[in-house]
Image (cartoon, rainbow, N blue to C red):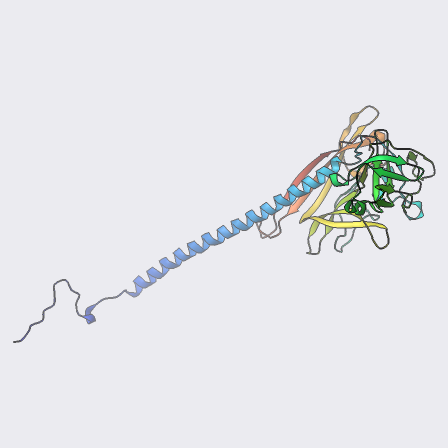
Length: 361
């Protein structure tokens, strides 16, 4: 018996009669796909650019916070004496009897350098790594260490033996912090700046008879030439701490940009000489400008001249009629990447207001 095959209702027609997409439909679909992909790419690029901007801004603000914290703290501590007394004797002298920059207290505990004033004795203008950038200000702050680990209480002072006895044990770590180091000793009556020759663990003593920078062993008073000194015995309970000066400036870094630098002091273990310790503190700091607020010590009035530049101190930084009581520091920081409009780095300016707490500067 013959079987008749019929086409089921609703089934597609024969293969040859099936229709696909036309060329116009394909092109429209491709165009819509490209538009969609372009939108996704644009969102991705915009999000990436926003992320880069935010990351660079965060880095700028983080650097600014660190600079403000470090800088303002050291400005506040300029000329500080832990005992609250006045620095009466500075017997530190370098070769030829000259006072090194890190002990030049006779010129003032705070000294500024305008953008045109070179600081050759510390760090001069130049184009090499760590050289000071022309057109930027700098600031010298003379102060003792604020590290509690450096503060020692003394049991006695023997001027005849040129030594101080610690009220507790001198550990090896303490010895290494004081051997051949500049230090400040003070009690409630006066203070003296000198160099400790050696610290003895066995005797718990600090000997200053061998300090190569000491022009005298008299710690009562000393003039700028160290020609007139007076003896002094410090009271039991006097305090001893390391000297920690700082010179802040804008310098060229090894990456081709600029940074905020700090020059401190360190000991050359081979020669026993005190040398500059140059450290890059905050990267990508383009500029620093500093103004100073002064007062007349005789009547305690803030001068009407308001904030003045460093070049205004023609009479010197130790004048009692123009004593520095505060510093206003403007720091300009830039982003590491060129993420600003026009493919340039972002720049932000921050202001540090530092009031000098110590009035005997």
